[in-house]
Image 1 (cartoon, rainbow, N blue to C red):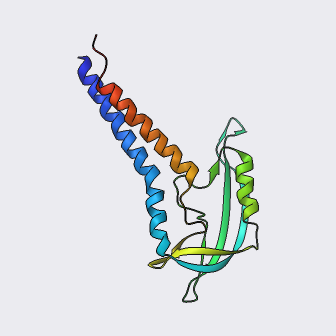
Image 2: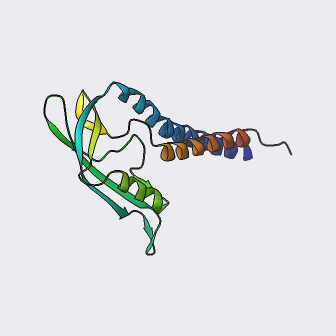
Image 3: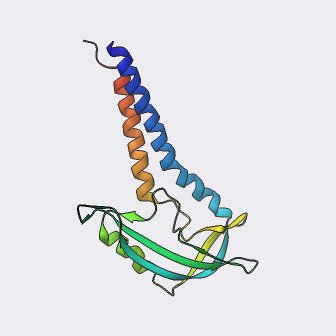
Length: 157
């Protein structure tokens, strides 16, 4: 009777672990493909710090919204708010981290955007993956996969 329960919990832990690992690795794969993307000159249209997730009036995360306009090789203009590759947007637990991003991209600042030549409306300002978000998902993936090993092989009584 206990064995089916262990198998079900093991399967769930393993599935979650693999899903979290995929979520964490995806930005790295996307950033590798961006090496072939074209660069276009542009400008920061707006940059602001906003409250993210709140709980009972307490701000738990701080959201950054940076909008920029860039020009492609054929002269078309596009707007984007993607800073880098990652899952979860641009939210930070620590306010000073979010403030640094806003200060790095002030309104009116000239920028270089990297856009997908096949989909020129898809662009980022930083080619690398979002290390914070990616690492968190990968850590959860490793933890759940590790837990599935221990759940799979419980000590004999």
